Image (cartoon, rainbow, N blue to C red):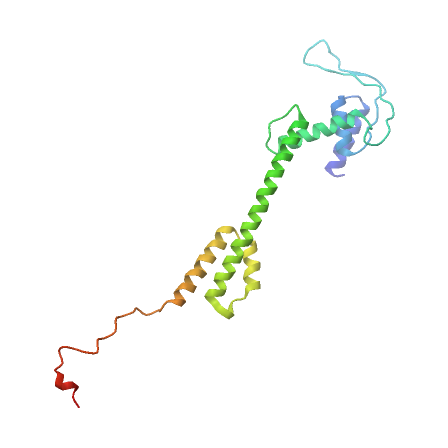
Length: 197
C-alpha cells in the first residue's frame, strides 16, 4: 500500500471516529476527492474542562446536490486551498482571499506584458546576431543551425556571439597587414644622373 492510500485510510478512520474538525474534514474530502464516512456519535475529548483539550462537535449533515452550489464546505475547502497556494507562492497569509487573488491576477497581467517584451527583445537580438554571423562567415554561415542554438542560449551568450561575429566581420573588412605610407618616387639622396638613360 503506498503512502497516499495509507494516509487516505487513516483519514477515513479518523472521520469515522469523529476525530476531524469540520475544517479538517472539508480539506480531506477536497484533497482525496472522496466523501468521508459520518461518525455515529459526537466526539468530545475527555477532559474538556482543561483548555488544552478541544471538543470536536459533529454537525448534522444532509445530502447536498452536486454542482457549483453544492455545499459551503466545498467553498471553504477551496478557499483554504487558495490560501495555501498563496502562502506557498511567497505571499503573506491573507484573510481576504478574493482581494489577494485579484492582486495576483493583476500582477500576472503585468508579468505577461513584460514577458512579451522579453520575447520581442530576444528575437531582435537573435536576428542581429545572425546578421553579424552572416557578415563574418559569408556563404559558409549556417543560419538554421546557429538560430536554433541562439534561441535557447542565455541572452549574455547571444550578445557575446553577436559581438564576436561583429569583430570578425569588421576585422575582415580592414586590411590584416599594417598600412605603411608609399615610398616617394623621388629620392633626394640619389643624384639626378641616376635617372638618365
